[in-house]
Length: 258
Image: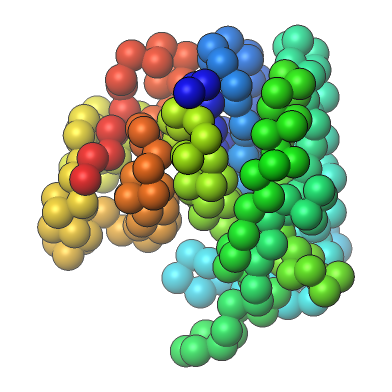
């Protein structure tokens, strides 16, 4: 089986030109096939403010009404995605920018309303592996924005961590998949106030303990839920790390294990 590395990058790494440049320079050096999945929430919030579109968040999750959907489609699929593609080209990687709608890559369904109406937010239903594999076999590097479609002509805002996990899981039967979540911290921390308190190995049981005690909370919870979901679907390795962890590939960061 060929090796493939899926890197999801988000948080301040995407928003800071210096850290993004460092990441992309190291990303192209990863051996074998690779995919980059990116976020861009802070950029979307800034552009929305300039356009007079109110940003509504519930428990750290964006409510995507029709106006907000227009903004995130422009920012994620356009501004952020194409900047990354251009930077990768400058680093010698033949990249292509995609959303879930391109090549029918990732279809989703609009999240049903329960306690909260998240609006035009999509939960992943399927991944088109054949088209993606064809690109990878031509040494093309897919750069995927956190947008999906419902097959009925509608775009949907979809969590980038979930998209990375879904891609990794769909490719696991055909490749030896490593999934790396890259953000500004060195890994998952046992003490949120100490950036060096990295949990080197995190099991699902330990994750639940930390979650119940409040040590792991907010945005880290869906990231870890997605990471453990990928492991359960046959993904070989899941790591949560920073840009230095991507570069060194020495096991630094937090390695998830069932």
